[in-house]
Amino acid sequence: MRRLPPLNALRSFESAARNLSFNEAAEELFVTPSAISHQIKLLEEFLGLKLFRREKRKVSLTAAGERYLPSVQLALDEIESATRRLMTSPNLSAVNISVAPAFLTRWLVPRITRFQEQYPDVELRFSSTTGFIDFEHSDTDMAVYYGEGNWRGVDIHFLRYLVSTPVCSPKLAEGLNSPEDLLKRTLIHVSGRRQEWQQILQQLGVRANTSTRTMSFSSTALAVSAAIEGIGVSLADRALVQRELEAGQLVVPFDITLDKPRAFYLVYQEKRQLTYGMQAFRDWILQEMQQDLAPGQ
Image 1 (cartoon, rainbow, N blue to C red):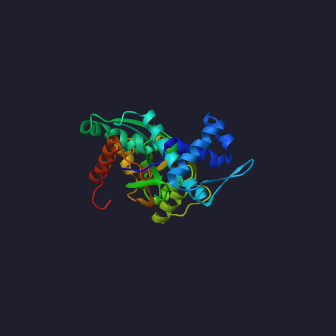
Image 2 (cartoon, rainbow, N blue to C red):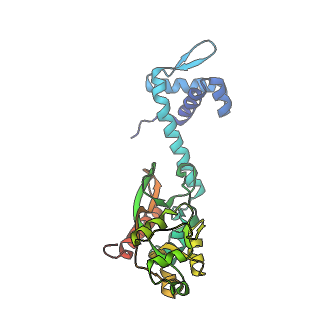
Image 3 (cartoon, rainbow, N blue to C red):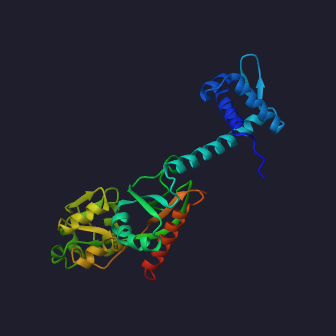
């Protein structure tokens, strides 16, 4: 049996301690100053410790009060966050998931029917974003991040590395007889990742020059679309353009890959108790990854 102080007493203490005023705490909590004083007295009797020094026109925290305040604030914040999550998503089988756009449209969506067959009672609600999620103040339950896996405040599950290779339209590939011919084409890259082409060319033993044409797009999806249209040669992960490769919309002119330290990760708030739906999605996507990656990949 937990021995916990009354919640109203904790709320009164937190407000009074933060404002260093019983009057301001009373205004904040819509009660009278005497009610605040009564709640503080109850809490001090419960603890057997004095939390405030009461002076003529002001109050201040004792050493015990200063030690107690951060823990109380943390506990109240956690209760508030858990309550908000439950109220915004009362269906524990529903999961709100934020996913990097390319991963969502090119890897995840084509496989969703397999999840539905295995977990017909779980509702997945996807949103597409490249930003990071403030899980504490968001109704998002889980997210797929792209990066180096060194984020704080989240539990992290590795999914797969991004392995880039040159891709282009079949017609454009006809004139690519040697790696040096890449310099005669427009090299397409995603904004902020221009160095990837430099690394690929270096692996091919080709040195770029000032006349090399480049073009950047804000997302992988746009860069791949430009490659399909024959605008130039793009870098893309084979797994994310598998449909286009199988359909003949794209080809790989040179069998070379750029292995990078960045990868896709499934993340959610650190130490959060997972709902049934969250557990189902986590277990499913990790299993899919194991089955999808060939040995040595």
